[in-house]
Amino acid sequence: MSLLSVKNLRVTFETETGPVQAVRGVSFSLGRERLGIVGESGSGKTMTGRAVLRLIRPPGRIEADEMRFDGIDLMAASEGQMRALRGQRIAMVMQDPKYSLNPVMTVGQQLTEGLRQRDRLGKADAVKRALAALEAVQIRDPERVMTAYPHELSGGMGQRVMIAMMLIPEPDLLIADEPTSALDVTVQAEVLSILDALVRDRGMGLIFISHDLRLVARFCDRVLVMYKGRVVEELAASDLMAAQHPYTRGLLNCLPRIGGSRGPLPGLDRSADWAV
Amino acid sequence: MSLIEVDNLSVTYSAKGRAVRAVQEVSLSVAHGESYGLVGESGSGKSTILRAICGLAPVSGGSIRIGGEEVPTPRGKRFASRVQMVFQDPYASLHPRHTIDSILSEPLAIHGMGDSDALVRRALSDVGLPANFRFRYPHQLSGGQRQRVAIARALMLAPPILLLDEPTSALDASVQAEVLNLLNRLRAERNLTFLMVSHDLAVIDHMCDRVLVMQHGRAVEELTRDALARAEMTTAYARSLFDASADRMLGAL
Image (spheres, each protein chain N blue to C red):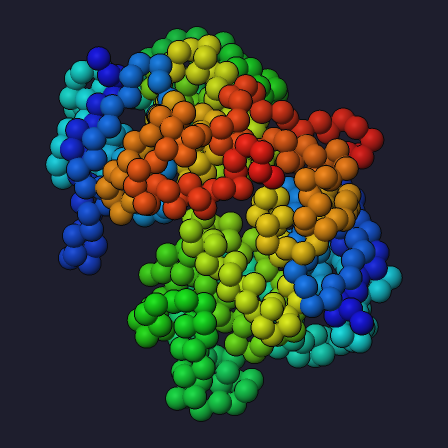
């Protein structure tokens, strides 16, 4: 049975000029695998991720024919039930550690907060768990990082702290929204291998949201390509080179290549039928 | 003679009483009309070199010459009319409460250039923006459009040199392609000299004739574009950076 199944998900925002649909009928199912969602900014990929956690504030509206996580109907769940799911069973790594960590709490306080409140652990045990979590994401000097404030960390460290925080409750599903976009290629590889190990060793499901087609192709099992709130193509990551949809092909073609021609890069033709 | 000459440049910041050596004895020279790239991981000092050239970073040693002349401190108007910079984040580098018109006409006013009306209109059309964008505010523009405005602003004084600090890393792939094409077209039309920073080797390869690989504030290795494409790097670090970019090779995905 699939871990998460979403059918005909729609996210609508009421604006002064009428309703805007950010997500327009997205359906997918996820097992214990790595699912990539790619698309440009504004394609609705982040909104899809947030909708699964029902993290869309009014006046935004979530509608779906079905949204089930491990047998639980997410559309019908009460706010209390959702709160029990969030973090514990479905966690989300947000895009920007600068804005998603609390700037006036040390990393240690933030990491142990949940353990103390939710799991009722004693201080010493909570600290021990937090240190182990930081070590698990390859932070070399976890004692120092525990006492540091978010602004004292580099982007890569901040991102890893976020991942560590999300992984402490051992969720069944992790939604990672551009977890590596702010990172260098070398650090990026490290973060990816951490996520990879978690999917493999713990059997966690992963939704990996990114604008980087090449990265998703290399890292994920399956890819959804989104454009303007719709899934335009779904394919196995290994088949991405053989993508049929003109949008996917356009996204692939507009990337510069080492050793490639230096002529103008092909732009994306948005005049075709699929683009409306 | 080289247009930009940086000789043994060092930049040292002091943070909490501790000296941070962001750039250590880096030398490079860029010929007239050339496009020169700087790559490396974050914290390698590549952006700091651009900032030092503009007088935005504390230079602790070495010299910077533009067209054979030592740059003055403070940099002054003459420098501004010869060297301009385009920053990474198009959301942070435009004044949020100034219209595009006032953003573009400010350098003209400072330099006492007349006919700003015609120059602003021309600048917009040169970077491929419609004329009715002129009285919009930055928040009414997309990231790619803002970066076009930033490029237009940098070119208002018709400088021969552009310093580009990750000009496309905040943009989507398709928008990146448009902005890179724009930069290449402007460079060809106006015979501009580029000094460009990027962490993406494929972007550097597409844009630059030569590239300097940096790590921990030091220059590691300089490569020509051909040497890069043929993977003829000699240092282990440049090699590892290249290997991490293997998916950006021609023929790869």
